[in-house]
Length: 387
Image (tube, rainbow, N blue to C red; front, side, top):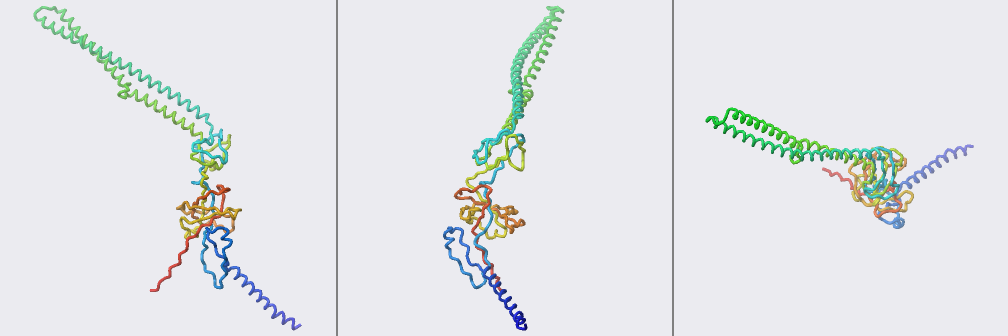
């Protein structure tokens, strides 16, 4: 009984020490790096045949990996175009379907044009009335020009009669001194003079009135009445052009060449101007772009123009060559998540755009792929000098 107690007293601690030593050695072996990261530009066969680096007995150096891993979203060149309508209304016709290729100016869908068509017809009639009034003013001006000419002739004739009457009175005055003319004849000639003066005044008044009326309508001098009618015609033309433009804008056309990515409207539905979901989504798929989100912690290791490759999910053996296009100047809040528990939403990312070159079959806009970018070598920290 005493021998069994001594065995338990010394044997159990020894077994526990052996198990603890084995656990520590297992953890050290699992944390030791046994391979190196192959360059991105190495073909898959070479990467498979690349020799592994044996674990060193000394602790591994704390260096960053040779690539930057990030998520990339496939998008059309110059991003998607959310085609909207300027005027709300019921859709009467949709002329495209998903995947159709369109040219700039092609009709995508049509909003109800019944009211706009009636408005155009009304504006057209108003223009015709205004143009008829302007033509009437021009004809009236021609009539007044003839009246002015007649009034001038009458005034000239009245002036001649006045001159004749003045001469008769003057001659009568000379003859009266010699008693060659009677008093009655002298009075008659003076009455003729006063009549001639009155007729001349009347003729001049009619001439002034005719000239004033003609000045209002004269197109050559831009008379006020003519300008009013001309402005009415121009206003009617502008109203008609506005109505025609409004009618034309109810037919929504493609702003540029591209491919229809999504059709979110159907005939009979009500299209709202400025809706959160665009009726038509358009994009240019040649070439495709990949918008990569680089975590803010990896921004110091990113260099503009760095080579990159993409790996579609579900096809790890397919490598997509990516050509650097540009880097967005603004660092934005992270929105694209990988779905892993290690994702953080309180970080910011630098968005870098790459082009898929050459085109890759099976790649679609909106698809998320894994992207690996060659990292820039990190500079060694400067050693402080002693003074």
